[in-house]
Length: 151
Image 1 (cartoon, rainbow, N blue to C red):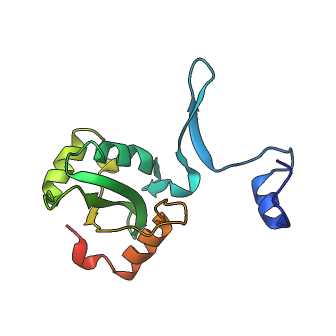
Image 2: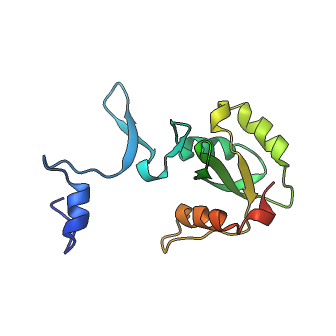
């Protein structure tokens, strides 16, 4: 890519002085040289100086039978910088309590990756292409819109 159309600021932010394109994607390369995209830099949660990747937590949560969809975001925290918030759309009216969800995730992930906040949602803020707008979940959480939905 040579640049964004009529947007030199975005081009300068994405392409460095050596011509490298910085997409904001995170990935891993296997022994055969194949790259697997594992997340986005913008979505990374920094909790107490440790980098946490929402996709890893989301994939673990999707193993739960009662969870249809999930979005994990970092929310501000005075002590840790950010905490993990897990927004979930349930499969049915069966909604496990926070203690059961915590136990479930702790079987799969380390303690620092365990969400501090569990929130059931009925619908999502979506883009025109149907992707969850995580920044809107974070903004709504910060405003206190989900205070009554916290488990």
